[in-house]
Figure (cartoon, rainbow, N blue to C red):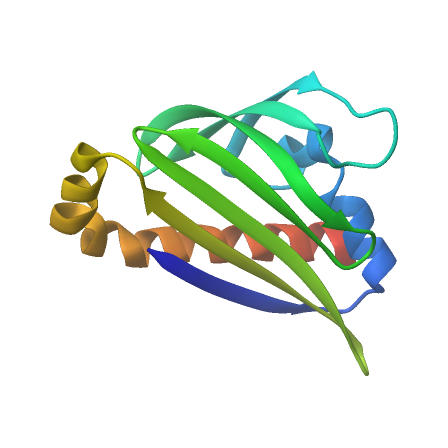
Length: 148
């Protein structure tokens, strides 16, 4: 499953970057995030930052370990998580517009095991729209935090 959502934000790329890279503060920004526990901090930059994120999605609480694998300051960063036989890759990217910037989120779930492939085949379509809606809500929460 691969999804993309985006939102226009009336702010500079730097202002957006400061909010989306402040992982420890994300429970105060994104309503769906209940708790963040930082596990590893890099000496410089954000690549290698690793955290445990607890979220409520679809009425259930889930905790996943995530880490930043790539980053270009004030432009984009990519996270990775591995759970239930799948790899989850999310990319947040910022593009300057004439009146603000666009924040995009790309999410990809890649099943790795036979069991995960079977589950994605049987139930993936059910969760696609709900996941897209949840991702969009994350972006709207970020937009509100940046613009306020």
